[in-house]
Length: 224
Ligand code: C5P
Image (cartoon, rainbow, N blue to C red):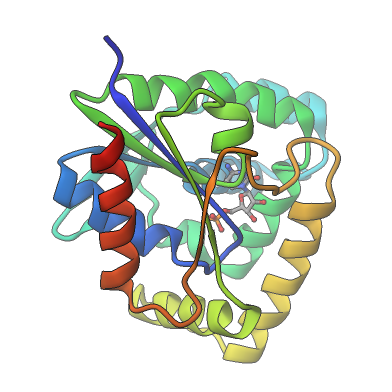
């Protein structure tokens, strides 16, 4: 029997990472941050001087992606070839790069097996957070959530998150970057950001984190 699969999709800053992290800890589930995987691909490309739209070189690079997640303290850290790149993948150029490489079909297809394997390796359950988990990666997930929040709230949260991770930025910069990435993520042809038909919608704009986590947890328990 496979682990219990929870899909959490939504735009940047809707609260996916905070909610997923807490849920994973409370339920004892593995956490697969799929955005971090796209960010790792962008980081590798950037380090190797590969353009974010060079399909041939990206295709070759994908064969060398080695990623694992590990909880360090309270945080879900991402390791690329054994190196902890959790902070480095959050810088603005790598964020834009992630958004760009994620629009390349070769990259999306090349990362499918990795995302599925990371989830299926889990002991009892896995939470995957991303943009197309419920629609593409696990269309047969046991529960699907689509987490939303209004743009200002999302930008504030992202700014706060970056600040706490030690990445210096400005609220205006974060909002600008978010607007561009939202447009790119929803407008692209492959796997655009859109809710699965059977997703449970949650708007977290005016809900405290604890309430969002509780409501998702209740829904998960109902279906287990
Ligand atoms: O969630 P996060 O902001 O870390 O994701 C970085 C980028 O990766 C997003 O802007 C999006 O373009 C892309 N992404 C994606 N599909 C996913 C997760 C992330 O296209 N499942």
